[in-house]
Image (tube, rainbow, N blue to C red; front, side, top):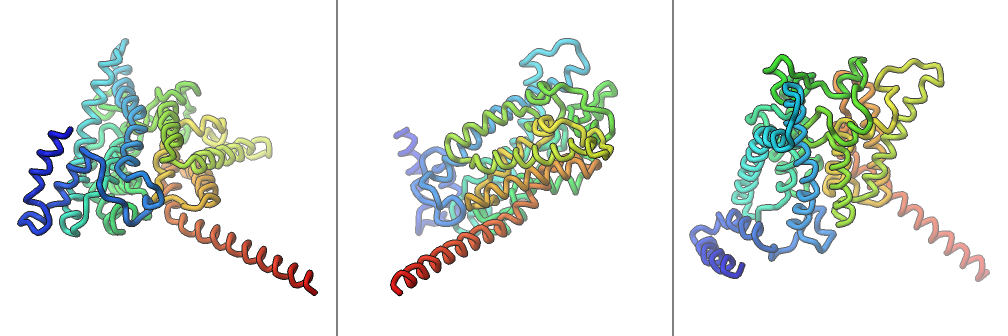
Length: 394
């Protein structure tokens, strides 16, 4: 590593302060940061609150995403191959899925990092590592056959409007990855919904279908899968959102390393469970339900993008609530609204994206009222103490 360090320092000399290529230094320094521990500290944004550098935080999240990503590649191939042949080998399925997903990841990183580099050079600041996570998250929450140019345009929108417009990494009010998905959903709805976008080649091979569990339930056709299949992830869906088991493995790493806040994760699952239980109780009150309202509450927690959104999107330290009590409220409302949207909107039965984006907007409001309540409580306690001292003196 010392040899690499020396060569890199030599290469960086024309980009040093006062040199002719100084304005391009952020792009070269990004390579230095990628290979070695950063020699600078965060000066603003959410990450200034901890001694760990931004690079290590982002790399930890990337590692936590790997189980869901690998499973998503395998499941992407399995969902297609299992419908056209009797036996499906592990490597065969993984290879088919990788051929679909790896190009999406490459496009996401190429376009997103390209924009990051341009803004860093234009503004004269270092390239932030924040897109390391966003660049991987965006393909993971997309349908497997979405055209690469749509991925590229969604990335451009997410980086420019969702992040750079607010000042860059640590300053955005909305989760950039969900911003990309929301843009793709409303700009290209036929590629983001329906029963032929969630399984590879479903639009090209007549024998292949790809309707998700939520789509089947919304159409009144039943789930068609066991609870264990739902939990393990042997179901159609977005690339890396199907396996709750793999997602929970990632959540465990985030919680143990204190990168992801367990309060948001726990409260969001509680909120989703409570809302599902409320709808499950409708028949006992004489109100006729449908397949979505009658779905057992625990199955609501393991289908769709609920678990993935809670673990990897809701816990984003930039767009989430910052106060401890606010995190409980923020997470609980995300789970509550996710299931509510899922049931009340059969045209779009996956509500986690809209729930998180909604609560991203209200997170500062939640923190404001939590802080004000704490201030009022302390003032009241101080006044009571002063009155007690006055009464004692008298």
